[in-house]
Structures are given as C-alpha cells and as structure tokens.
Image (cartoon, rainbow, N blue to C red; front, side, top):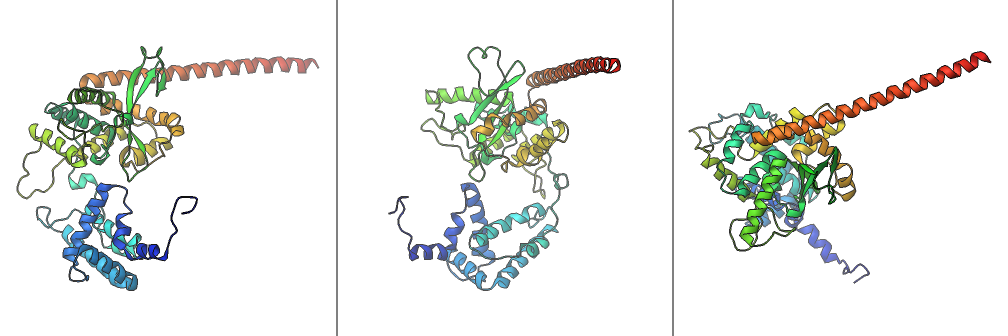
Length: 422
C-alpha cells in the first residue's frame, strides 16, 4: 500500500472495469430510486422486446452482448434505437382510450436507460437521429392535467388520519418537492425568523420574544442532486412541529436530529418512509375525501395527478406571485422552484448570505401557497407590512437624496458667489 492507503492497481483491475458493462452502468447512479426505475425499463426491453436480437440468457449476459456488439457495429445498435423510436411514435397516434396509447411526453423516459448504459461504456450514439422520430412534447394544458385547487387541498386535509399526513400534504403543496425528496431528517429543517424588519436564521435570547417565523427551509438531499434548499410556508412548518410532537409520543422520547422526519408506520424502530409510502399516504387521503374514485371506462389519466398535482399548484402560485423579471426571479422559476436541479451548492457560506435573497422572493408567494383561510390572512398581513416597510424605506431614501441634492445646490450657489467676487 502507498501513502494514500490504496493497494497497487493491477492489469486485472483494469480488465474487470472494461469487461463489466452492467457494473459500469449500475455504479453510475446516485439515486436508488432512479437506478431501480431505469433498470426495470432496460430489463423489460432486454428480456422481451429485444430478446430475439441480443444473445444471452440472463439480463447481465444480454447487457454485455448488447454493449460489445454496439462497440463493433454502431450502425446496428442505431437501427435498433430508431426502430424503437418509430414503434413508440406509432403508439402516440392511437386513441387515448386505447390501452396501447402512449403519451408523447413519456417517450424519452424509455431511452434514458439506454443512454446511461451507452455513456458509461463509451458506446457512440447519434441521439439526434433517434429523437427526431419522437413527436413534440405537449404542454400540460393539452394533456388535460391541472393543479389541485386550494379548495381541493383544504378538503383533502379534512381527511388526514394524523399529523404526518397533514404535514406531507402541506409540505408538498408549499414547496413543490417530489415524493422522492421527502428523505430528510429533523436537522434539515431550518426556520427563518423575522425580527423587526430583519430576516434571521438564528435568534438570540433577547430577540426570541419578538421573533416571528415567516417560512422555513428544508435541505433536500436526493442523491441525484447537490444538497439544495426547498422552502415551506409557516403553515407547513407548524404542521411539521405538530407531527414532531406526535412522533415524540410514539417514541416516548424526543426524535433525534439525524432521525427521519417521515417514518414508516409502526411503533417499533424507526425506518425512513420510502417514496412509495409518501405516495400511498396521499392516495389514502384522496380516497377518504372522495377525490380518487375509479376512472371511467376508457379514461386512463386523472385530471389532477395524485402527487404532481401539488407541484402544479406550487408552480402556478409561485409564477403568479413573483414580481418583476429579475435574474434571481427567473432563476427561481426556471431552476429552483420546480426542478430542484441544483442552483447552488448548499454550503455554509451561501447559506448565510445568498439564501436570504431566495427567502425574500419566496415570501411573495407565501399567501398564495397557504391553504388555511386564517393562516392566509396572516400571511397577507405580513406581506402588506413588508411592502409598507419597503415603501417607507424607499421614501426615506428619496428624502435623504433630496436633502443631499439641496445641500449640494447650496454649496454650488456659495461657490458661484465667490467666483463672481473674484
């Protein structure tokens, strides 16, 4: 071993890396959920659609065979991808009531596993030609999907079975995060305080009496993304604190900072709630509320997607609330607010400075994102107070500028008098 604590690399190590395409593919994923989903799609094609074209009995054997042959004959594998693209395109032209119908927006998902496999094994592919066969994606309004309304979310909340269900719904609607992003611990939740006109991450003992929580940050740590923040309303934050009290009763102790906020049901042990559990709990609330009835014959999609309906609600509320077209507002709308694709590394330096710029933008949307009428009235009052404070500050700045101009004018008049005397 050398000074770095690593053993010497041998030619066998290099050979193993080159000769195991499936291992190269699987090791490239940071998110377990994405790995499972991509691999399920890839396996379906290998063991079914392409089974007669690719040698091998097992999934791994077929992957190795596909990659090896693709390296030797790029045109052969390109023809396979183009053929798949044409077949999928044909399905998009069918009647939406047909079981074979395929939404144009979902076609690219079938190619993502192949693209990942080929990229991780240095297989060249003319993706432009493959994607040229795919019809244009249709906007949400055309596909018929719409966001939940505030009234629908409010109705849903009446049928939650405990504080955890309530907090899931309010966090989803006020942050726009995906079901897979509910993987957070208690230390990942940071309230934002307002003391007088100042926004603070922490308060001193003397400030606590005047401090008001205006929103909170949840650090999202999906493995496929950098650590990034999501914002929630005071209403959602209070729901989380109510859930924390219920959580403590179940555990018979206070939950630890590094324990999951959303856990699997049961009194023994603490297990993180997976994505499927978050979705199932929402679906149960929808059923109890009479909002997830069986689809009519021939209809395949609901008007409101069961989980993405919250994201659509969030997106609509934020876009209607943000003022102006500043670069920051554009950044929030295009990147952070919906996709969470990583605006910034969530390091402590950024957290202490730039994060407050995002907070100010988010606070404009808090009234629109608040579900309870009472809480929304409070949020509107806070927003009006903020606008009044900003207006008073601007008036004060204008008044100061006028005074400065007047003083400057007086000095210039005095100077002119001396010049005339000379």
